[in-house]
Length: 57
Image (cartoon, rainbow, N blue to C red; front, top):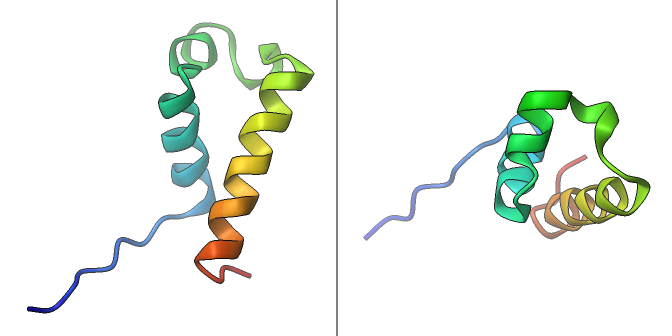
């Protein structure tokens, strides 16, 4: 059985992780600029961790 690899662009990845963290509605209604520094840092850390784990750039 072969495994299918899912490819993301960084923006899709960022939106997916934001949704998992529960930030999607806030982003949709107010925009990315309304995230607090703590929320942005958490999101950035998770995106960076995913990228390292999957050997992106």
